[in-house]
Length: 333
Image 1 (cartoon, helix red, strand yellow):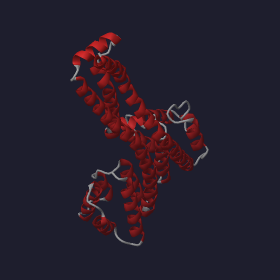
Image 2: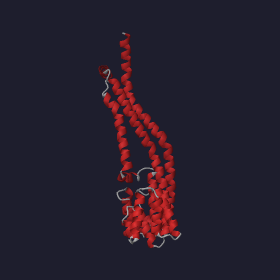
Image 3: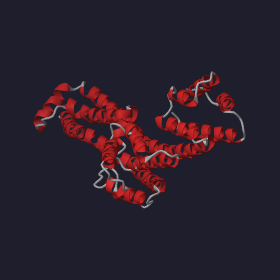
Image 4: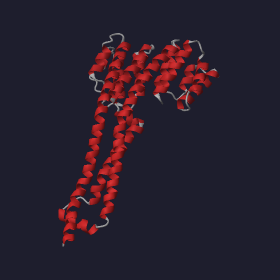
């Protein structure tokens, strides 16, 4: 789901509700202005359910929208401040979109280099293999004389195989949500973005009147299967055991750094303010880390491409230089 589209939709919907337009009519009009896609379909179905008299809570629960979004809209409706909650959600998804657009841009350089390296590697392997077919006996003699233990075929195709494996791992992380959710808590830039997202979600839930235990429960469901999810489950256990202070509850945390816990604890009794502060700090840290990685990604990718080409051509050069000398000697005789 496109976060920028969801953020813009919420901004427009909040403005229309503040001006007195009924929710069903506002949804109908906004859907007409949206591009065809999953988000438009979900809101069209939501408007249709509301027009039939289905309560908003039930209509939202039936839609395939982000779980956090559904819970927050339900909380906003229950507190009779739906426009205010939609505005907060619009800001949240706008910041989330800014971070993830940069993170996706960060992955473009490695993806391009991997594709280029694989294409070049396969090209060199096929080209050199076609040359070797013309003089197979001579190549075997050269290989025997040089005491080369690794066959020419392995020398040619091993770099391409390595690049293909790396590319497959990259695609697996990018397209499989389970792998992506787990890896993002271990990579620089991605982890700071995850910390900012968790802090923003928690701050919004606490500000809407959700108690800390319920907020942690929803966070655990959202981050299920990730290192953060296991850590949040431990927080819940400690909270149930009587550790009401956030510093005690998060003591010894390995996923959430001390700075994060200190920022949240600095809010005192107002944990919502502490989480908002942590969200702002880690949002800025994520953007800074991503910018630094972007400066490093291009030269590092070019260097990796050069190393791959060198590793592939070096054994071939070792073979063809003696072969060229032998051809020169044969021609002279």
